[in-house]
Length: 128
Ligand code: HEC
Image (cartoon, rainbow, N blue to C red; front, side):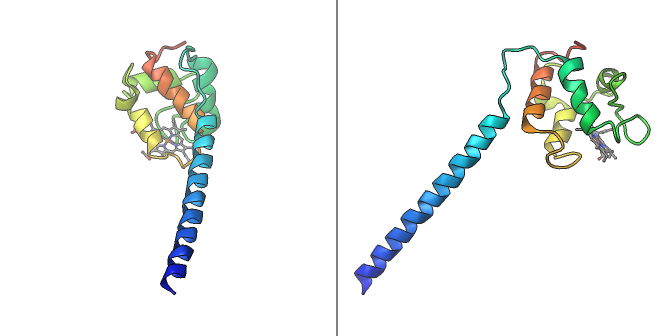
């Protein structure tokens, strides 16, 4: 029965489209929640960026195991002198390129943390 087959196929396709649409909408929702960083606030290096390095990076980046030294007392100086930051231009900053390559592993920094680091660089990467 060709007509019935066609109907079955149409129903199947509609269900598939609903499932796909649903999974996209839930992903979209997750991303929005995570990336909620207010672009109108000034990001403070000492209060918002250094603590991220401390919890996610310093276990290796202590200046002995891996360079740059990202411990709070050295992070700013190490990043600037090592040319890991292109002031005002996060896209050209090797720090961001490294993090976008999922270094040290996927999820080590959250999306919101990454957005803050990007914003801080684009705001001029001050030692604030
Ligand atoms: C498990 C240990 C480990 C952790 C945790 C880690 N790193 Fe690294 N990182 C390394 C090692 C080892 C290298 C050198 C080899 C390489 O480039 O992957 C490196 C290299 C780098 C480089 C490039 C250095 C260069 O000279 O080119 C940057 C920038 C960097 N890491 C930033 C970070 C940041 C920011 C974090 C925290 C979000 C982090 N790393 C967490 C081990 C680690």
